[in-house]
Length: 104
Image 1 (tube, rainbow, N blue to C red):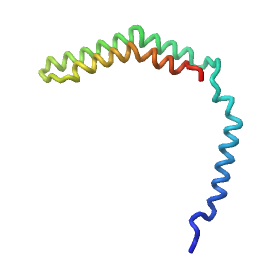
Image 2: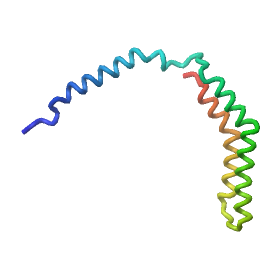
Image 3: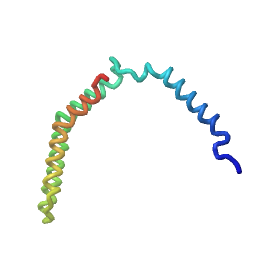
């Protein structure tokens, strides 16, 4: 009868060593701080969604609902989706921005 665990100890030991090395060397990168790497992209994206981009997305969603109503196939989704998109664009951006810029 052969053991199914034979030779598994070295693999486990190597994996533990890799995790220990990565934890020791990579802790500087995981710390929250004053890194401004993505600040420009965040400001552009936030400005787009809170400005004309958010309005365009909401109007297009509302137009899709109106076209569906005019086609004669009424459903609650044609009203709920444009309302959800409008609420998401209006309130979602500050929530995501706060989550991204939070200091842990």
